[in-house]
Image (cartoon, rainbow, N blue to C red):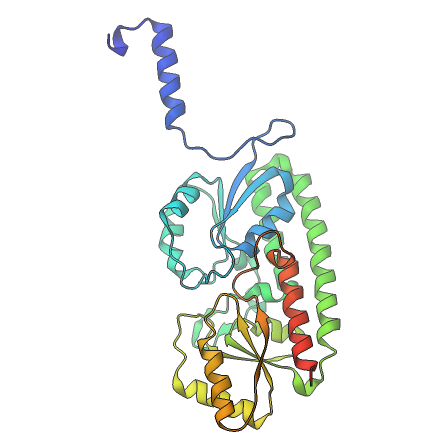
Length: 315
């Protein structure tokens, strides 16, 4: 018997069942009140952590990129596309951080809310990419004072999508901004203990320029703002010369970048009779493992400040 020959009530139940099977799954139901949570996908852990702090129980948040993942070179997987397609909201940094995902995000933006939160920061506060003057440095999370703009943009985006949650989003943002202000103050106090002549931060790539500006540190990266830029032999030689001439004794590796170039600096300085050590591992483009202190934005920034301060004040 075909569906056309079924009684009306049977046909209706069949059509409803088929429609339910075809509907995309968007988000689970909240435990409290039975209201559906927003299904939010964030490209990086830093963004995901901010959304969780602001939205609380009103959203389920998924991060595309986990610990140690470089957003400059990241390419989507099939499972990423499935998550993005099911999401109610997609948030990314913008400022060309996730350049490999640009086309996918543009296509998604024609069908659902896709928001570049870092592009809400006033342009006057942004640093330009020294290698590409028409672009901005995207590593804004290195300065908690700038990250507040991202938090406020996240709040406004959530309120537009879920007006009934306005009071919850505003309360979450107020708490988060207070934590960011306290974090900024703690880091400044800690980093100010390093003697001015030692405030030189040498890293694998230029991810710490906003950190340097906020805390009065000179920052020297082997690669440029993007890890896709090549670290030429001339640049390595220039930095070796700087290490030897200025008697810099500690440089830093990054969790999301190969340490090959940092090792080259150490070997180059050693060949010229100057000993340089690795001062520690910094979180640059990705946070630490979930469930750890460094797996939160605040813990990530605190870890970096403590590691830098300790290494640069050591004999």
